[in-house]
Structure formats: C-alpha cells, structure tokens
Length: 287
Image 1 (spheres, one colour):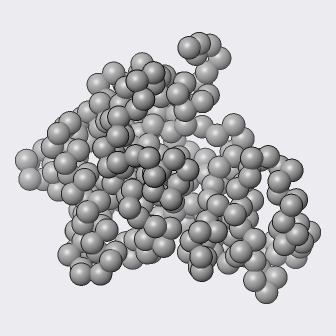
Image 2 (spheres, rainbow, N blue to C red):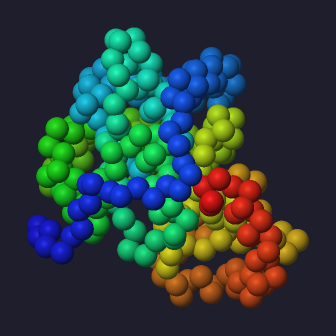
C-alpha cells in the first residue's frame, strides 16, 4: 500500500476560538449519575461505561485512542470516554492525560465541522491526529505515528452501514492496520444518542441545528428533507423516525436532486438565511 501524497497531521494548530477545557469532574459525575437511572437511556449509558472501563482495564489508558470526526455518535462517545477515564485516573491517584484521537479528514469538509473538531480538541483535551486518504491509509499513518495504541474507541452503531457485523470488541481485518475496535454505543439508536447529548448537555456541531442528521463530505451531505416543516428546517434531535437519519446523505451530488422536497428547500434557502444565522449565533460551536 502506497501512502505517497497522504496527509498526516499529528501536531495540529488548534483554532477553537473561545473554547475552553471542560470540567471533567462534572462530566464524570453527571454521566455516572445518569447511568444509575432505571430508564432505557440509563441502562444504555451504564452498558457503554462498562465497555469503556473494560477497555481501559485491558489495554491501559495510554494505549487507547478515540476515533473522532465531529459527528454526533463519536461526540457522545467522547463525552462518555472522558467520564470513564477521569474515574479510572482518580481511583488510582493519577493525572488525567490528553486523549489521543484519530481524525480522518473529509475530502471536502464543512467549515462548521472543522471548527467543532478544533473546539472539541480543546474542550476534551484531545491529542488530535488528523489523517487523509482512505480509512485504511489513514489508520496506517496513524499507526506509524502512534505504535503504542492498541485499541480505538469508535462510535459505530448497529444500524450504521456494516454495524450489524461487529461486536463491542472487534479487531480490524487481517490485511488492515491492526487495532482492536471498541464500540461502546453499538446498541444505541439515533434517539438514544440525542437523548444522552441533550440530557448531559454535550456540546455538538451546530449543523445539527440546521436540518442535518448525518454528516460527511460537503458533496454527499444535505439537510434532511424529513426535517423540513413550515418552510424551515428543524433540529436533528426532532426527527420523528430514526430510520430516516441518513436521508440527507448520498453517493454523489446528483442524487440530491432526486428528492423534490430537498430541491424546493434549496430554492428557499435565501428566505431562511436569517433564521439559520440566528441559530448559529445561539449555538456556541458556531461562534
């Protein structure tokens, strides 16, 4: 496999604006408190924390990394991992170190995602390693830079593409860079992710307040037509049917035009610009 021309940026200049590091103690306390609730969400949180704790015990905090690209699933996971890492460190009288994080760069990214990733690196004390190319190429570059990392926390869910074929602990295929993939939110749904984000006040990318429910490259990502109501796009968490989560995603720009609602909505963007700007201004990740 040739890595010529691939980008590897381990030392990243952070441009998080007014972002500040969060209180990990408060994150841990609130998350573990939510995990004691008898609700479905409480049980999901408790299960995810147990999986994270098992990974920490098995590999050690210094041999673990987080896969993070700014999406909602890995954002929720990042919050959970920080909660568990602090409890682990405090129980042993150890300091809380930076969390090594693998970020595969999109070919053409939203500026809002870039900004949110940089802000998150500050808020959660991430040692951000940005790589480009295919997933396999990016992981190889990451492994070359971080040979000590044995396992990576990933925000994959069962209803994601290929998510049904993996388990909580799933090694990469034999012909891939060797890591153990740890999937603590594997059994979570779209609604579970948003219930946790909103219950725990987890900062998230502001695009989710503008009608996007699944984020990727600019050329393959559009607002979800299922959220277009009364001439405006609603926030992602208000999506009534989680099965429609990826309705705004496509393999090419051409497929966007296949949805008449999306086309009409695009024509009305100018009329909605003022509202979208107000939403962005009210959301800290867009400042």
